[in-house]
Amino acid sequence: MDTIVAISTAIGSGAISIIRLSGQDAFDIVNKSFRGKDLSSLPTNTIVYGKLYDKDEYVDEVLVSVFKEHHSYTSENVVEINCHGSMFVANKILEMMIDNGARMAEPGEFTKRAFLNGRIDLTRAEAVMDVINSQTEGSLKCANVAMRGDVYNLIKNFREKLIKCIAKIEVNIDYPEYEDEFVVTNEYLKPILLELKDELASILDKSKMSTIIKNGINTAIIGSPNVGKSSLLNALLGEEKAIVTNIAGTTRDTIEGKVNIGGIILNLIDTAGVRETVDEVERIGVLKTNKVLNEAELIILILDNNRLLNDVDKELLEKTKNKNRIILMNKIDLEKKNDYKGDVLEVSLLDENFIPIIENKIKDVCNISNINSIDATYIGNARQLSYIKKALKSIDDALSGINAGYPVDLINIDITNSWKDLGELIGEGNPEELINNLFTNFCLGK
Ligand SMILES: Nc1nc2c(ncn2[C@@H]2O[C@H](COP(=O)(O)OP(=O)(O)OP(=O)(O)O)[C@@H](O)[C@H]2O)c(=O)[nH]1
Ligand SMILES: [Mg+2]
Image 1 (cartoon, rainbow, N blue to C red):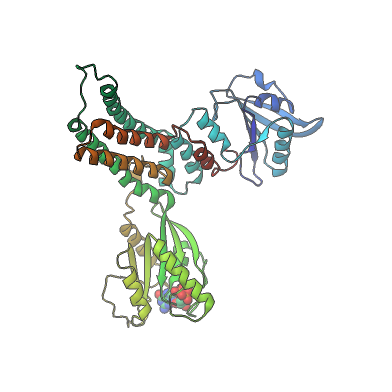
Image 2: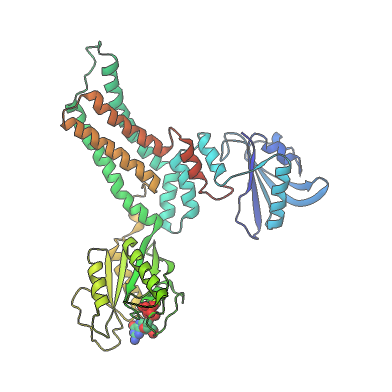
């Protein structure tokens, strides 16, 4: 494979920048510009000091790390050039390496090579991306557990159980003349498959938590105009992100912000107050509110303590009654005029003492218990989950077949499908399109 190069550190100035190369010719390519020891002669996992020259022009003094095949991130020869942290210097070195024969890496190509060279499976490759993107302790923990290979092992063990069934059945099919061979029957398979089904179902169930840990909870703040939606957004964020005025209809478009509550990210969306409206701009805002409402995983509906429920309040209460919601009765510093009898949390958003109380309510409603005490071996992403679901469906099909009295070799087709689905989850089978798609979501240089 050709040798790839990329700047692996973030764009911008810092103390150092790292330019990383991977491939057969990595040492020779850097050697052409490096004055110091011959990199190919060094033992693996070594750092050396030297100077980089662009032909005869001095460029920078650098520390160069050398990793040889099988001892590197990609399993190929890898060189990492630590230069001074100016983007100009880093770009210059990048160009020199391309002149010397390297090719610019695509996003995620280093990790893709680690995967293609068999050093990591797909779940671990995805975990690398998750570590980079993690925003909370919990999401980092899940990503690290996956990177350690726990998700891979979970799936691998599961597949081993399936393959044992498949092997026994195939022996029966392929060698019917061996009469003393154990004959697999539907009665024999049923309890095994039921157990596997339970296991997969429990993995799916646990993964709901991981999606929350990783992606956070999409939370919509809704209510009539002027009830204090933007005040709540600002208070939770701890900054004046949305404009707050006493003019109804202040927020015209949705405003978003993220806040970490008890280790879980809330993706907050402040919406335009809902009212029957003639103003075109506001009407679009209100339409958006309806969309946000449908997609939200948590709804914070705000009512105004200082006035009676209006039609919009009633409509919103009705629309959200089966959703995960919190109702805030805001402005309790003003005279009580609202006679709504349902379950509400009474607050005044002008008083910051209410914020921790609201946060605790959110933790309660969303079951954000102690994140650290949970088992972090979760299936972390939509792609992986889709294969778990497929595998579960195949096991279900196998069980229906058993109940309908189908012959064992037909049941075997479903069991084999389940085994194949889980293989794709960890990247065995390796369909090229999927792999290419997946790695382009990575950042450059990783
Ligand atoms: N007295 C009192 N006023 C409040 C309270 N919370 C918010 N307000 C005021 O109510 C007004 C409206 O607040 P916003 O946060 O802009 O309300 P909103 O729901 O975002 O309004 P729109 O964006 O217009 O739909 C502002 O003048 C706030 O200062 C409260 O608890 N008590
Ligand atoms: Mg507002």
